[in-house]
Length: 466
Ligand code: FAD
Ligand code: NAD
Image (cartoon, rainbow, N blue to C red; front, side, top):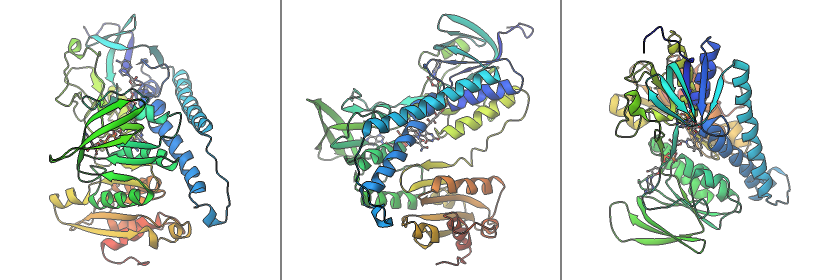
C-alpha cells in the first residue's frame, strides 16, 4: 500500500490483554489514532479474566481461610470457628474480575481507544477483518496472548479434568485433586484447593518443581509445599487419564521409563504450560509465519519481519508474564511513535503467589556460575526479626553477584511478602547496583526487606544477624 494512503487507524492492536490494552492506551496517549480488537466479551485478556487476577482472588481468600482453619490465627490469640462459604469466595473473585475489566473499558473511553469487538484475521499486511468489519491500519500490533497447552490424549471436560480456568471455578472442594505439572499454575491453584480441604498430589515430569527458578529455591519450595501437605510425584509422567462416573484414573510412568502405576482422583488439573495464540489469525496473508514453538519472532524493537507489523506479550518468545507483556506494550507504542521504547529482558521478576511467596529476578546461581565466577550471599527468614515475630520462619533470600565487579546478577527469595520484596532487587539491578550498594542502603526496621540487605551483606561475609 502506498505511503500516502489513508488508513482507518495509525495503530490497530489485536488482543486486549495486558500487552495489547497497555499498547493501545500508550499509543493513544502519544496522539495516535488507535483501535484494539478483542474477541472476548470483556477487556483485560487472560490476566484479568482467567489468569493473574482471579487466581490471586482465590489465593488471598484461601490463605485467610487456611490461617483461620489450621490454627495459625489461634497462635496469635484469635479464636475462630471456621466455615467455608465457597459461593461467596467465588463471588468476590468474580467481582474483582468485573471491576478490573470494567476499569480497562473506562480507560479505553478516557483515552479514546476504539474497541473493535470480534475476532481479528489478517487480510494483508495493513488490513484486518474483525467479525464482519474490515479495517486498515498503518501499524498492527499482534498481542494475541496464549492458551492452555493440552496433554495429548487427555480431554479437558471442565468437570473432572480441568484447565486453569476450570480450576478457578470448581463448585465444590475436590476430595483428591491431581495436578499435572509442578509449574506456577499447578502450585498456585493446587495450593488454593489444598487450603480449602482437598488432598493434592502434584505429578511433575522433571526431577524438581518450578523449572527456570534457582536450584536452591526449587528444592526449598518443594520441602515447604510437602510440609503443607501437597504430595509430589517427581520424575513422573502422566500417560493417560480415563474418566468414568465422575472419577478419573491416571496412568503414571517413571519419566525415564519403567512400570506404570495408577492414581485415582475426583479432579485433575492439567497445567503443563501455555502455547501462543495464532490460530485463525491468518498470518500468512500478512507474509508472516510462526517459529517451531508457534511464536511470532520479533527483533529488539518488537518489529516482525513485515514492515508495520509488530508483536508483544505471550505470543512472542520470552517468559509468559503479565508485567513483561505490559512493559512491551508501552515500548512498542513508543517505538511506533518514533520514540525509543526499551524493555530490559534481563531484569524481569517472577513471582509465585503461594504462602510463602517465591520470587526471583535475574540469573539463577546455576546459570551465573556457567557464565563466570560469582559470590553468593544467603540470609534465612528465620533470622529476620519481622518474619520471626509474625511466625513466618520459612524461606531465605539469596543474592548472586559477579565475583570481580560485585555487580548483582540475580536475587531470589522465599518469604511471605517475597513478591513485594523482589521489586527493590529489580530496581537495584536496573540501576547496575553492586551487592555493596544494597548492603549500604538503609532499610526500614522491622521489615522482611531487611533480609535482602543482610543477604547482600553476606555476599562479602558480613551479615549482622546470623
Ligand atoms: P493475553 O492476556 O492472553 O491476552 C490476549 C487477548 O487476545 C485475549 O483476550 C484473547 O481473547 C485476544 N485474542 C486472541 N486472538 C485474537 C484474535 N484473533 N482477535 C481478537 N482478539 C484475540 N502472569 C503474571 O505476571 N502474574 C500472575 O500472577 C499470573 N497469573 C496467571 C494465572 C493463570 C491461571 C494464568 C493462566 C496466567 C497467569 N499469568 C500471570 C500469565 C499472564 O496472564 C499472561 O502472561 C498475560 O496475560 C499475557 O498477556 P498478553 O497481553 O500477551 O495476552
Ligand atoms: P509452567 O511451564 O510453569 O509449568 C509446567 C510444568 O509442567 C513444568 O514443570 C513441566 O515440566 C511440567 N510438565 C510438562 N508436561 C508434563 C507432563 N506430561 N506430565 C507432568 N508434568 C509435565 O506452566 P504453567 O504452570 O502451566 O504456567 C503457564 C504460564 O503461565 C507460565 O509461563 C507462567 O509464567 C504463567 N503464569 C504465571 C504466574 C505468575 O506469574 N504467578 C501464575 C500462573 C501462570
